[in-house]
Length: 133
Length: 211
Image 1 (cartoon, rainbow over the protein chains, first blue to last red):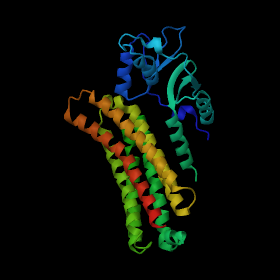
Image 2 (image 1 turned 180 degrees about the horizontal axis):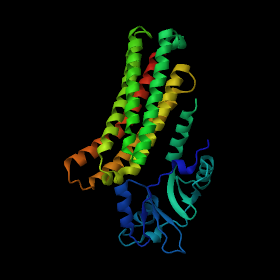
Image 3 (image 1 turned 45 degrees about the vertical axis):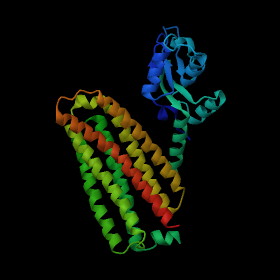
Image 4 (image 1 turned 90 degrees about the horizontal axis):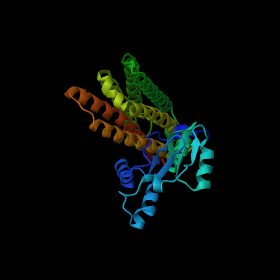
């Protein structure tokens, strides 16, 4: 299995500013039918974050907080776990298993360029098997 | 027994060889299409037309050999259906290539990335369809797995079609024909994966019918 992360990653990244409200994030998640959004760094010294459906449900909804009054940066997870675009699939799988995560962001130098999910890994593995006899 | 039914006689061997060539030509045509939509060189379209003509004559040859008595009668309809599906993929590819000639460049730019991805997937699907056919004939590997891989790819094309549709809805079209050509082009390139998936399903049906 020599497939690399860059071959299967999804380059369509949805981003949000850290000072946007959780309600803005919910709108994006619903409209784009996605489960997580990349939170942009506040400034050059800051790092990328991520806000997921899970964060919103457990940190806002379940606590009866108003999504329009909470800022994304207040509940986003930082720093994100990311992997180099040249990494082979087997290493990606190990990383996902180690951290028990379903999605990993992909970086090229310091820039986040894509995201890869467990379903992408599964699909790529099945396609790889089908190419063989 | 299986090998005897599927590849026993001289006529059967000829059909199998021709089907392999037919599939190889489809893969070449898809690869050529992929290159010219990526380079946006509308003159390169001739390679798709030439390959489609070549494939058409091979298809006629295959059907005529089957009617000369290749394969047991109960297998023939599904093999013919498989050939027709591949042929329809050729026709649809040719239609897409024709439409591409008239697409306005500034409109195409909006959906270029997605179209290139679809062309790449179509090409990969054809490659797996070809492997799937070899798997059926030579009984090496699992046809079910090839079928699944093709379905995975088809789902990706569906998702890309959804993204393209979202983009096109926000695009201002001032001329009816510009809009129609763009819409038809998208319809054709996304239909190719459907046809390859259908062809793959027929291979699976043939395998089951031989058990």
